[in-house]
Length: 117
View 1 (cartoon, rainbow, N blue to C red):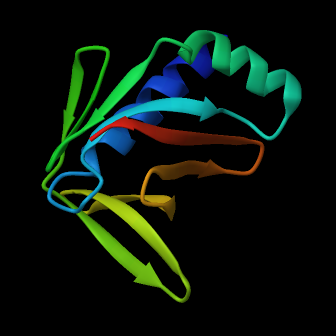
View 2 (view 1 turned 45 degrees about the horizontal axis):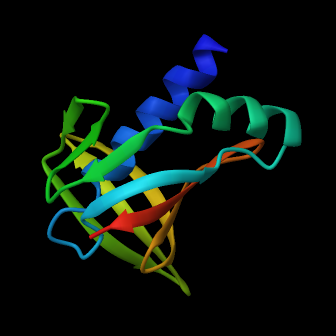
View 3 (view 1 turned 90 degrees about the vertical axis):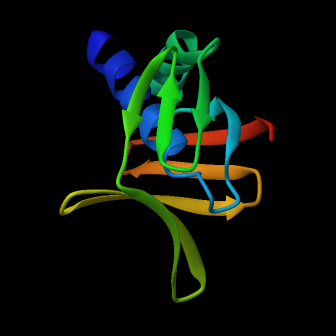
């Protein structure tokens, strides 16, 4: 459970960092944390009060700020991604709509919904 909580906080931080100057700045809450019912309910219990703040070049989760060199929106085919860049590393979050981001793949995905711009 500690691993899931750490993963959720890291993912939330990454999402928040990715939204500055790109139209996705604001406060987000985790709407769902997994396609697997058991993992999803466990993760959502840990993250139910977590607010993720995405700024122009940072993501803040429960007072812990992750800074990035830049956060951009990248188009690839018919999809758009919020890309957080730090040095030579990138982290991409799929943009579902103007208020919804998805981080991760496979059995553990986090869907974040904007609650405040």
